[in-house]
Length: 395
Image (cartoon, rainbow, N blue to C red):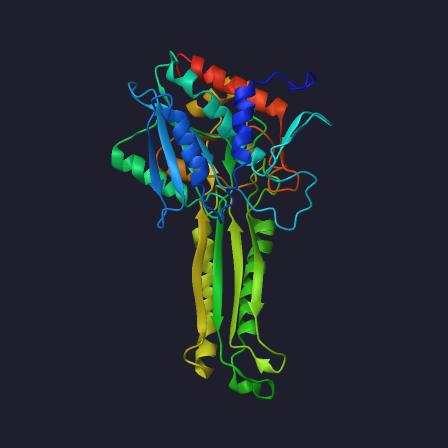
């Protein structure tokens, strides 16, 4: 490495670069990465538990570093990344290029979100195995986080079935190595509207699916405005109230045909103190009210709903032992809240105390020329070294 780059172990950097060079966009398989990590651990005599999706094209990995110890701390990361189609990159998205200016950075899709954390954690596997710590370290890697946190649910179910009860979980999403103790939930739905087509000169004999969809979309907007106007604020978030929005819409086939079909996608991002399921119930109730008049014209008309994803909000505490541990390891003087969703709420619902803390910034994630600074990776390196040397957990 160049003399002007931060002190950082070549092995750790090379591991991160190897992971970034693997194309694990959510629509692809992640098995190249999972098998790579499995084989790296097997060289140390560590066997991994793999849990697969339905067609076995993707897998989660769970490995315990310190089998003879009672319980352990999970270091958790997702292996999938978002695509880069249509983005204007100045470096190859899978190039894992290191540049010294304007600061030492590793560029590539997933470098911040979140292969930097995974690579640094993996580079410490042998150190964790030989650690004097009274607890094990578990490495947990999931699939399909970016499209709905689907893989981690299978991973947690497998742990429950196997009777594995971790002490706590540290999720290495990019927080600039500041422990995050809260984030909103992400709940996305698809609404399909069936109307009745007719020539546009005979509108009274039709049910216009686009217009009915628009009325329900208006309800989504009304709810968004009520959250902003009336909901108690949760200071610390960039947007300190719940939000609702429509992301996609499609309907109709021609200007002179009353549309029979329309669909739209919408989401709620609920505060940890709110309830997105009740929000969805309010939308469905409005749809059922609208259906009364629709069915008088066409009994088959109505609304159907599909769940795209339900990622629960997360609320920890600055006083939780796992938060105190993350602060101790990172040297952070504070905690934070993050705007993006993670798997933290799912781990917590499973009874595993959780905190979010990892290298890089979410401001770089999902962007063209995504990067993680080598300074951040070096901070993560110190975090792992301190974890391997930890003699007791905060209480």
